[in-house]
Length: 92
Image (cartoon, rainbow, N blue to C red; front, side, top):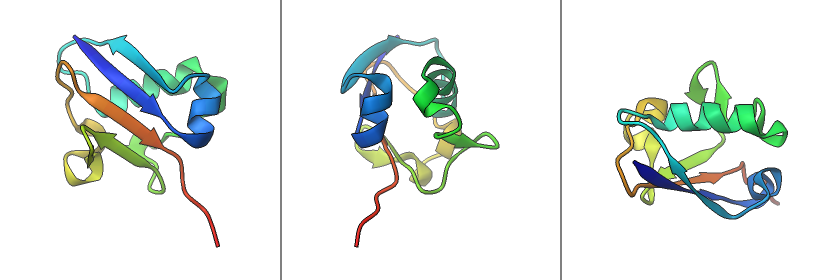
């Protein structure tokens, strides 16, 4: 099944593009996708997950809803889902 990934700010820079479509297997979770991304892009290594869980300062959305309000890294994906990955926001 195909899902769409969207990257923002420093994560977009690390991946080199704003969006990409990925083919994943049934029962794939958000954590599975993030693990794959960390392994593929040096700039993401260790930036998305911490001990198998989404790093607390990140925002990861599935179809516009933060996965922390679902099952976190264990949130399952379905065909056509959009996963958006936002880095920590700092400001003053």
